[in-house]
Image (cartoon, rainbow, N blue to C red; front, side, top):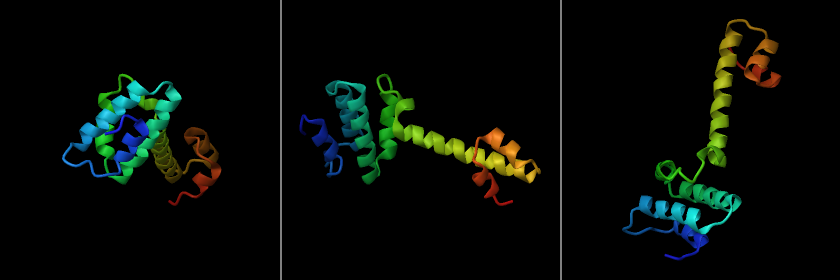
Length: 126
């Protein structure tokens, strides 16, 4: 395998052969940590890795690896993680808003409590 991180990232798209994809992913993550300077470049490579593993259906393996190497990787700063968290909070807020609406609460109150937009609250079906 190449020494360049960009080539290693693209190798994810190929057939890793007999090697364990999880081991390859772990090696790439460690190379990103050890061979890149600066948080911005590391974040860029990690984001690229997230995109490429989706194409090979290796997201679960990457998630497991990212948790195991979290001593250098702050998952709370990962853009994919942040997007998922926001989506989860939004979904939860919609559920709370629907329950409040069913109980007859005022839309202004629901907006204040859930931080949802008036349009989102009004569009909720009882």
